[in-house]
Image 1 (tube, one colour):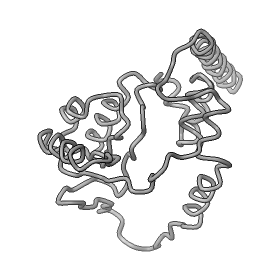
Image 2: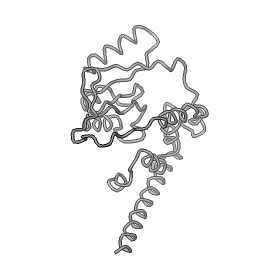
Image 3: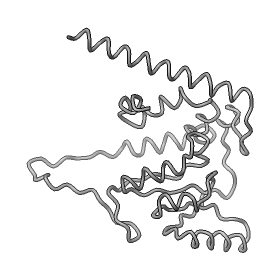
Length: 216
């Protein structure tokens, strides 16, 4: 794991290793959008239109990119967005993300479609936010808000862009569905992909060592 982290210099690098490691249906769920992925590509393109313009010949000895949101100070203006059922792609995924966000002091939003109890994640990171899909009845909404309040979660994020379910064609093609149903095919992919990924990691490390040896 440590060797892989040393080779991952950007988020795109992590995606490459995730594709090797995860069973195909899980990777398709994480990496894909809906229908033809047009909105996904447009979102990435919209961020690419912005650039950082450096100011030269100025004092940069005291840099600060911190930001205050909802009365809480954070170390950076970016954080971890809600990732549904992340426990399927990594053991105790929600708590792992919450713990990492707390360590780096950045916002973390727990998904309303998590497989982990929000109370358990809140114990790991009391400053976490919770993203909710509002239930259909007022009684269910009240119960949800009461539960979030009892867990002392400071920020409730309401998702408003899903009045109907998304048409995730990539999930259908990949064989992913919720509730998630384990199968022999899925287990085989998990075993073989993990072995292949470990083999590639070892070969990559061996090649790098041989190249360093050749230089000297």
